Image (tube, rainbow, N blue to C red; front, side, top):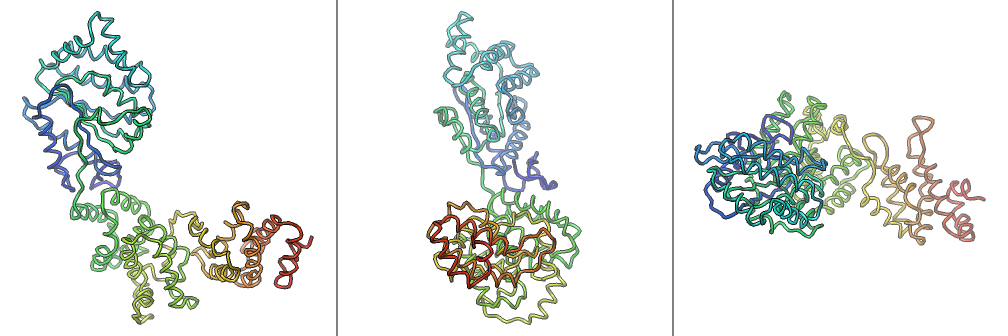
Length: 540
């Protein structure tokens, strides 16, 4: 994957010409092209350009090739492009490589016939060699023996033939890191087995970590194959912003002017979103997400708020989930005092890395002005503010809030960390009971309470993973709150809907049957007076 084309929303479309450069890659590409043409070396030479996914490797390769093609005729090398990813999984990827090499060389009249024939001979042998690499060297030597010549003599003959043709050969290979580990090893076997012909340069683009891991399984190292390596240049902040803004401009085209406030965008971006845009892959992720999610809400939501909440979805999913699952805390709801909201939000913020806390907190205040009252003790004209928010279709408007999550792709479950943190409170029945009641008051946009989500996950939780000493506390807490949460719960909307009470009965039944009969009987008697639940479930 590569630097995103400005006029396309696809992350898989690299830029082709340096004139399209938005990230300052063109000067580096030109320098690399000049180096390839001017450097002097003995034998073959392998240059690697390292970069992660979505770092712009393919774009940089395109730029280098363009600059090579612009060289004067007496300097312009023969360029052989090979994309192994197109043949991934093909057991004859080696043959595909040599076929591509021969196809290009056969079209160049200046390439000696002897070189083409010798490459064909080597291809016939190497394409049939199994791993490991050491066998490749022996097989090539065997081929030379069958020709009744020593391997060193044949290599000298081939190098002499290559040296007779004036044009340098550049073999450019991209997308190596997209291959399976077996295919990566097969490809590097070629680089190691084929003689390093003078005047031949390998230009390889890949994610170093992926390739090193694949080669490690056979004991190989890049240092034995690569003569020189570059890290792909890191774009500066100005270039990243320029690219992102051009992409965003295309995505929100035709958005009504009243639903995009330039000044507010500037503030939210600089003090919040900008913190998370540090590399090309961040831009790709955000713009690809918006390409899918924004069209179905265009005209119904505030564009600035939507970009901000989608940024949280990508870069701080914990906060996004918290907003989605606890939306009454972020809008006007009498059940949530400022102290209660502050406690909730501070708990979520505390789970973030230190560097993310400030920009996330700022985004939350901008999206939900109510939090400014909570954190800053600044009182606003709530009625006037709510009216303005609804007119601008911002996320803090209760009627508009669900639209922002129209394409919410979350599972609806509590994360493992959230679930475990709740379960950890089962050291004390009162604390655990209070937490259950708190969850019963937290409704998601679909009307389901967080308590229901927790109970359903607990009901499916492996029984043996709940410590024996916590069983009585969990059962006691469930019995303590069962009647109260049943009153809070809405009546089932359909005959087959399960109520919280039914789920609690199932949980209690499973837990009680993990303890001995005497303890179970005594526990049932002690709790019988508190709720009808036990009498229904464990009389026998």
